[in-house]
Amino acid sequence: MPPASPPPVLAVRDIVKTYGGVTALNGVSLDVLPGEVLCLAGENGSGKSTLIKIISGVERPDSGEIVIDGTGYRSMDPTDAIKRGIQVIYQDFSLFPNLTVAENIVLTSAVADRRHLYSGRAAQAAARAIVDDLGFDIDLDADVEQLSVADKQLTAICRALVNDARVLIMDEPTTALTHTEVNRLFAVVERLRSRGVALIFVSHKLDEVLRISQRVTVLRSGEHVITGAAHDLDPRAIARHMTGRELDESRQVTALGPDAGVVLEVERLGLRGAYQDVSFSLRRGEILGVTGLLGSGRTEIAESLFGALPHDTGTVKVEGRPVRLRSIRDAIGAGIGYVPEDRLTEGLFLDKSISDNIIAGSPDQHRNRGRLLDRRAVRKTIDGLFERLRVKAPDTRAPVRSLSGGNAQRVVLAKWLARRPRVLILNGPTVGVDVGSKAEILGILRSEAAEGRGILIISDDAPELVACCHRVLVVRHGRIVEVLQEGEVTVEAIREKVAA
Image (tube, rainbow, N blue to C red):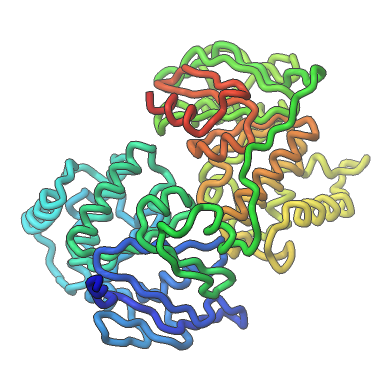
């Protein structure tokens, strides 16, 4: 007989949670075993975040219970959860940027133990013990704000383990990591598994999910859909369970006709310390990908084309005319739009309505002959884009803060489409969104390109680039080192060239 499975270290039973009459979770149950990675998958709005908040004591369930080592609890507060070995590493890591690595590692432990005095020597000793135990190479005296994303994540892991975490919940842990850093993180995860730590891994990257998880639990619309062994599933099956439909993630690019003229021409662009000698062209109707490791210069190139980081050398032409890009105003005036990677802090007014956000960037496009705002035209644009981009919200008066990541991204897109730019640059267009929203956003970009717009996508998501890009530029150390033409654009080729 096969050995019996160990009892769950954590289980939730029949969890129900409602907000103002809207059911976020409806009788959800799951368990996680010691030394196991359980993937929690689902579209934005499926209930994943609510379930994590309940497990970690941030929210109270309406009914159901949380079971830890066989003992049931109706609810917990965050301190209770930490004391019982439950820790969450959120996407933003929730670290204190002005404190050192050592201080960040020990702080929550001190708070949970209600210590009133802080000892720098004791903090260093406790932090050093956990860092050495895990074999990490990290400067304990460095301020967290100086760290790379990968080292911030290691700091957050150490902080969790210094509290004797037995269940570690990781929310989108690989979003901002390079391929090499993902491998490094997964090695850490395997080390934690070998010590009996249970991990709940939340990610929209389904290939990574299957690589690291032993089991997968899928939620849809607040309900449990399936829990199955990872080896019995594939990305297509998980996506089907998440969305309730088949998704087409195949490569879809339309042939560019001979009359598809150049809409953007970049010649020998340079910015000291960021990139140099960058030249490429973008045709009407083309989706051009730009990829490379974090720090390669790819984002700086995009921000220069939007006037946020004025270039030192080189020229830019839009539809054959040289343009001066010394400010964002210059870029917008030249017909260039930019969807930033951090849409929440750079792309949206979170407390304003969907309507206000959509129209915020295009009042001049909606004035009548008397230069007054044409309210009928404004309403037509807002309603048209809200419907076309399928923003999931009660109506356009809903605050953007209330939207899921995928829907917030649609609103940023709508804001720029309302201006009808000649060139639209998108930095990480589907970062942090679920597979269903990702497929729909890429479909929107294809339709915009089909109308003659030039689309530039900055991304390290190889499958995303393959799905929609005609060509892909590879940036390394501030230079374009490879240009993958249409027949060469494959996941394997992109990853090989980026890692070279």
